[in-house]
Length: 215
Length: 215
Image 1: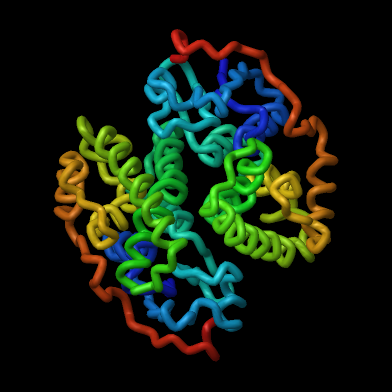
Image 2: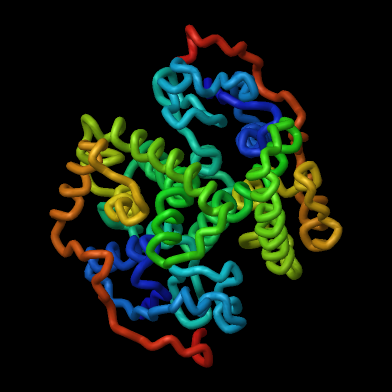
């Protein structure tokens, strides 16, 4: 059975949880306490040298990292991955944009605030820049969604899943979504899908974190 | 004909130039002066709202952004994109890792230094963090390449192209590659491929930048 190394506060983990649930794919879920650096232990680094969650165990000894690569793998053969070359390219464009322009600003701001990371003078300054870049990202999405229901094509794809994860909780990072009406309508639309789960829902079969049996 | 909006100093642009040349695909190349903010003009923002190069015009009016999404599009049906699901997932994992863990550290440090960006106290501090994270990325690559010729599978894929772009010029960002022997061997191996071009090679058919006819 698939096993997801995850953290319940992570939007990147939520992307994977959401799609697995949506597709009724059974999976085990291991809660990794990132505040206790459980993803940076020697045992964890042996299965993901990058020391991050989410991490999907495809089978014992075989791991896939990077939330958007995991999304793409799960979506194979489903309606969440387009069936034509041009739309596939557009979805990948959004996925790379999310990891470069959206997540490092909106998700990192949320992480610093909600995980109570010490706000050094450098972080205070960095937060100003993240606020600016994060709002630019939200504006780009709002412009794009003004006359569209979904980011690519006529229905929900993994581009929407990847962007929904941190956009719908952007307020927890100090981003007011009030100025982005098209984004707000898209958030409502997304949440109306059958089998929708919340970022706080602990889905999957619970498997305890055990460094001795990580692999 | 394909048209690449590019900047000759950009490793992200080089990825696309390199693969198009490797595959003998004819293309036009428009040099965009990013130091003069030519990618942030209203005319350019109309074709890429994210205001960045590289940007590939697939046909008039149809544009693809994000260097790694462009790489993936170009590589369709070639040996640079694996033919099995597991290796495809591994390649995408590296591409997302490159944009999140490698490029923002190694490429941005190089950009600040080579483009003579004013080094404010905040940038001086940020550079220290980028140096640390960049070396962690290089170490991860070195460990992975110790017993392998290529990042994924038995031959060069777009994962290698994406990582080569900024790794082989990391010294221009102040990163000494001396401590990464496996990376150095991989860099030599990469450059021995037929049709290899340098990051400074102005390939493709030169088309002048003209805001009036960008589309």
